[in-house]
Image (tube, rainbow, N blue to C red):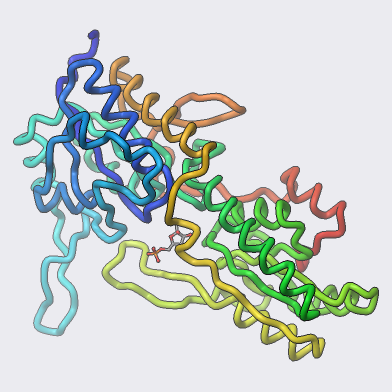
Length: 365
Ligand code: F6P
C-alpha cells in the first residue's frame, strides 16, 4: 500500500439520506482490504466534539447496504466553530469554538485522514480542519442534489422515486374527485426533486424555488384545464417555491442549528388560494421526511458504493481535501472547499425545464 494513512475516521453530517450506510460500508470495507483501521465518529461533528468514536470492523458494516439512515448517526446542529455551550445572564445562548477540542480528539485517536460524508453545511464544518492540516476527503450527500461541484449526490435519486410514487398515487385520487392537488416535496433553494419527480409523474404544474410563480398564473392554468374538460390538476411544488410577491414560507426557526430556517407550508397556502380563486376543490400533501428515509434505490446503492470506494481511492493516492464527484456521467473529484456553503441550483434553461415547457407544463411564470 502506497499511502501513509493507517487509520481513517468516518463521519456522516447534516440531514440523513438513503445511501449513507452504503457509503460507510464501501469505504470501510475498502480500507480494511488495504489493512487500515477505521473509526466511526458518531453523530457527525458532534461526535468529534464529544469524543464519541468507535472502531468499525467488517461485521459492523456487513449487511447495511440496503439499510436507510446511518449507523453512525448524524447531526445538522453541531458546527464545531459555533457550538452552543451555555446560556448567559440574559438568557442568550453562548457559543464556543470547539475546533481545538476536535483537533485534540483527532490526534488522540491517531486519525490520519477523515472521510466526511455530507452536504454543503458539513463541508463548511470541515473547512477549518482542512485549513489546520487535517487530511479530509468529502463524499457528496443530500436528497436535494444541490451540492456545488457534482452533478449528482447520493440519496437524490431515491427521493425522486419516493416523490414520484406519491405523485402517481395522488394523481388517481385527484382524477376521481376532480380536485387540484398540491404536493410539497423537499428542496429549499434548489428544485431538483420537484423538477424530476414532477416530470416523471406527469405533473401539470411544477413550482421551483428558482422560478418565483404568479399565483394568478397557477390559478388560471388550473381553471383553463377544467374548462377544457381536465377536471383535476396535479401541482408538484418544492418547499422553497414561493410567489413573486411573497418570501418562502418558514415552518419553524431552530436557533440551535447553524442553518436555522425550516421551510414548509407552501402547498397548504397554495391549495387554499387555488380553491378560493377557481372554486375548484383543492387539497395538499406534504411528503416531508418520507423522502429521506428508507432503503436506497438500486441506482443509489450503486452510486453510494462507487462514492465510498472513490473516497478510499483518493486517500490511497493521497489526494486530500477533494470531494468525490459525478460529472458528465463519470466519477471525478473537485476541491472540497469549493463546495463549502455553495449551492447548485436549477438553471432556468435546463433541458428538463425546456422539455417540460414544451409539453405544456406550467411553471407559474
Ligand atoms: O437538505 C436536506 C433537507 O432534507 C431539505 O430538503 C429540508 O428542507 C431539510 O433538510 C429539513 O431538515 P430537518 O431534517 O432538520 O427538518
